[in-house]
Image 1 (spheres, rainbow, N blue to C red):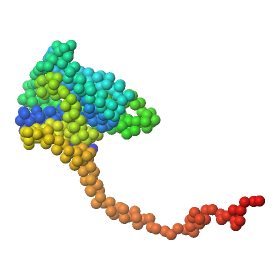
Image 2: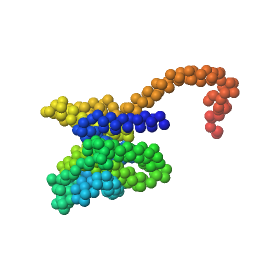
Image 3: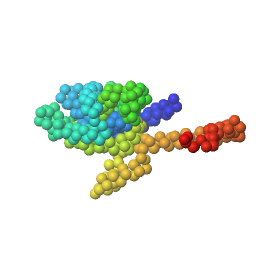
Image 4: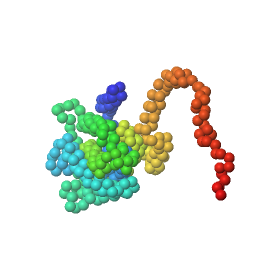
Length: 361
């Protein structure tokens, strides 16, 4: 209960403080951090908690973004109404992709999803879909204004709206991981054969996890399209999938809270590397990434969790020595009794009579 209150206060401060003190540009950056965090959370549910490696979640991000952009540009659907439609579309695509994942695993599944991420930009440029997707030029959409006459700028309202959606999705993921479905996902990740022997239906759990993961990342793509106000095929290259995977590793593969740190990493570190060196920003980015992996091999989430455990252990360790000494004093050492001494290995067998080794004539 105490942890819940602490998390609630931190979330409230994380929403209100930037909303009241940050400029529109910095609010846009924080909005993109929250959007990336939702996408990485979807990838974490699949890879970190279910053990299915994906290098193509940028494809689901693109599908969600284009679903929202097409609905807003072609049919004038309100931005908030596009989110459930995008969630259903991405979940269906993820479920269909999860079917071949039943027979693939490890690197083979990773290459399959990587192929999907490579093909999506070319599919979006195809002439058959050009009337919907806008082809190479893409689609332009309007950023929504604050409803009900609220005295908020579009960037402030979008940050507040994105944060509200993120809180809902994070609560859902938190409850899912700690429920029956989450235990089944982690059992498959740890040992699929043992999980199947325990009665877990592997095909159902894997396909549902794939659909749920795609839904999360697709929703992030929808929010990203609304924030950027523009979608184009070249904006969703395979680099997006790689960046999401980097954010997952940096934040912690199986850490829900670490997804926020991973999202902040992929949003701010490239800009920082570009400021450090205009000539070789990629080299600076690589050095920073290597240093982070060396210092925090379990990711930022695992590193912070280990610090938290050490802090709790340090507080409880002040009372531990008296308890341990009392337990030792309560069990004094005693000499073994004669009955126990007779049960030595030497006395456990009867001696062989003399001459018994001689074979009879």
